[in-house]
Image (tube, rainbow, N blue to C red; front, side, top):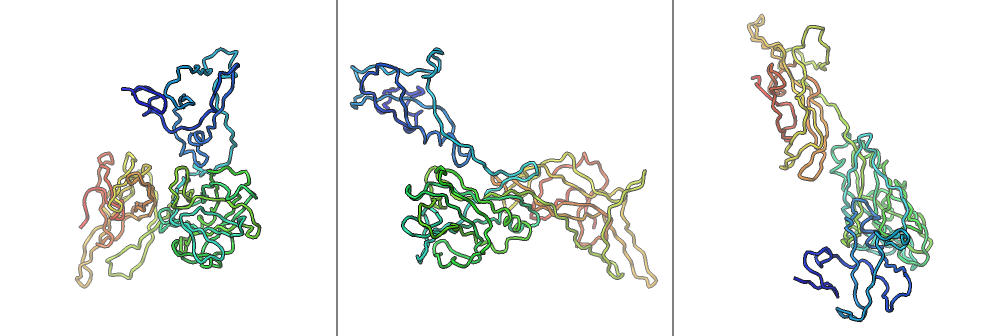
Length: 467
């Protein structure tokens, strides 16, 4: 069955059939008379090249399946009985005409793109923007669904931009367990506001010190409510290409949040370094722009998990005055074995946890340990001088540590806290610190178990509970 594509009739299934062709990407100038010599014809191809090679992010590159040249007649007819064939050189022609083979001429420049230092185990986490608002001096309201900008435009209006990211999924309550060594705000630069008076525009980022709502915030709400010390700077150069990325490094602020916690994250305000000189101002995509090729602001954090060791107090049922003894790890003399030691489940593999009612699988294998009792810890009963029954009961129990690991929760990577065994020792046992422990058996006989993080630890693996 034939199908019509403009002025061209094609058959279903052919490579250049309608269903295999997208929108028109360029157009050559019409040829109204037969050329008397080889003539070079040119079509603008910029938009398609920018789809194949995204100026914003390589992850957005579209697949290049090539292009099809589709002829049409200038008089609008479907056939031209008096028309001449138009023929182009192809790449298989003889070498003496190689200068006429089809080619694409691309104007480009290489730019630096910040990346995380993966060699030091840091990896990149992307945080989506939660709010943006454009503020205008002497205006009692802010503007949403408007391109963001900073500086003083050709009409004398002065602009600032407020922006907010929720970092709780990356740092949040997990601070101290997360180490950050770099991070950036990424903005999608669209174009200058005016082709007249174009210029370099430098701006700085400041932490806002009061809460705000994107639907009600105004210039006066933020006018003095920000920290005067900038946390990052950037420049939009006069030759910046539209559709590209502007990166603002705020590594020190992110590292401080990772170390000390995020107590007051009210977002950031972007302010031009020069708010007095009129001229063209740079336009950026806001958080509500859904236009193809426009990208919302994002925050990129280079992080890795840091292990923090914690030891819980040891409960005791002894009638003697209570003392706390910090367990120590000792090396057994040659030829002897400790009564209680830590062992590792082999082979090491990824583990599964249930987090917020979602099954999550660790991104990397996690070492699972358990307490192994080679010979019984002290367990005895005796009468004292007054006939009272004295019970001594020591169990092979763990000292726990908290670690944060990355888990894949149905395509969403999350950092989840889990409790793991650091070491084991013979310790006074009661209901407050009873853990399941392993009687003597080979590690090859151990089965790997999924762990519910709601239970809070990975220690209960096998065997008997001491009652």
